[in-house]
Structures are given as structure tokens and as C-alpha cells.
Length: 297
Image (cartoon, rainbow, N blue to C red; front, side, top):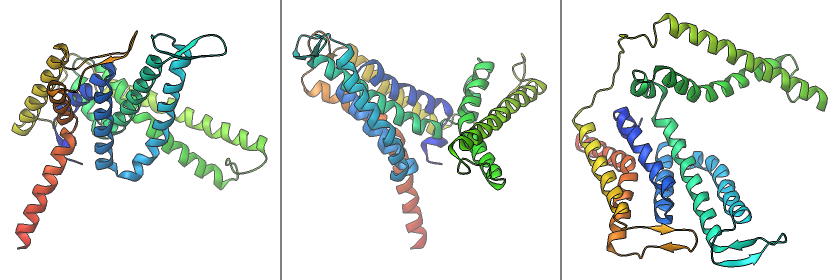
């Protein structure tokens, strides 16, 4: 577990909310680039470069698809480049917006890849079980369901392989039948597991008024300082955006702010915010290395 993952769940939730939310609702190319770069750096720090290579297989097609589709279906914009065979124009503004949407989607995918590593189901339950018990339980079960479902399919395949009924056995028709059998067994397991979980939570009084909750999470001095710094950075970025230190307009004519000191300040503050997990992790790693070196000496 890295340093940021060990922080209070509220800090992790606030961080991801604004790290993802600002580029999503404000498609400025610099915000998109900073957010995507920070998401990649943090995920590589957590899981390594080899793991990110698997995610990149989904990111690149998403960027290309959004960049290509938007100019084909959206024809707004004043800068016309050429006409499609059906007579609709392809505009520069639509291409720019498609690129922005593609990189925004890439950033969201990468942030959520680290999000599922940091925001575990118990953290969700801690944050929302009192206010929204049913929704919190459903969300935590959904986050846990996909990896458990895939793991169960692997176990079922291994069992079916022992009796010669795996996807690699028989003709194409038999392989399809074996695949449907494996999937049917997995779905049956999932339904039975969900019923058992619901009965278990009901028996334990989950969601009842006045029910107490045990939690290992406490806001210590480090968490308060981190939350205060993050809040200051978020407020600063939002105020600078509202004051039009940075601005962008895609339609009808692509317009973007000049790269003056005000824009650079806004981007720098947002970059510091997005790099908070990496800064905390690297600082902690260097601290422990210094302690180890002093101990050896």
C-alpha cells in the first residue's frame, strides 16, 4: 500500500472527484494533458509500467475513435476543411473537440484504474453506509463483482478442463456449447452469491436505524493537513477558472487563452493537486531510505 492509499477515505474520494471532474467539465487541452500525465505517472508508480501497457490497449482506441467519430457526426464550427460525400462539412473545431473528448476519456480510464486500487469497497462503505446504506452496499458489491466473477470463471474452466469440456475441446459447435455451459455456471454462482450476501447483510441488521458501525479510519494530523492543502488548491483553480485566467471555446470558433503568467499559475496549481499522491509516495520512500541509511551507518 502506498502512502496516499493509507490516507483517510475522504481524502481519496475528494482527490478523485476533482482530479477527474475538472477536465471532464472543462475540456481545456492543458488540463487534459496534465490530468492524463499525472494519472499515468501515479498508476505506473502503483502497479508498474507493464500493467499500464494493458490499459494503454484500451486508451489508444478510445482516443482514436472519439477523434474520428466527432467530426463525422458534429458539423458545427466556422473553419470548414472539406466536405463529406453526403455533403456535410468537416470542421476544424469538431476535430479539436473530438481530440479533447478522446484525451478526456483516456484520462478518466487511467484515473479509474488507480481509483479501484485506492478506493476499496470498505472505504466506500465507510463514507456512504450511514447516509446511503443501500447505494453504498450496491456500489461496493459492483466494484468487487467483476474481479470475483472473472476469478470464478477461471476456476470453472479448470474444473471443466478436467472432464474434457473446456473451450479448447471438441469441434466449433462443441466449444460454443462448452462456453455457454461455463458462462451459465458462472451466472448461477453470481445469482446465488448475491442472494446469500443480501440475506447475510439483512441478518446482521445492515441499514437499520441506530445501528453502529465499526471503523478503522480516523482523521489524523497528516490527513487534516493534506485535506487543507488539497482544498486550497481546488478553490484556487476554480476561482482562477471563474476569473477567466484560463478559458476555451470550441464552437463556433476555436478560441483559447494566451499562455501568460496567470494561465501558467492555474496550470501549475492543478498539476500540484494531481501529483499529490505521487509527491506523498516519493517523499515517504525517500524518508524511509534516509532512515535505513542512517541505521546502517
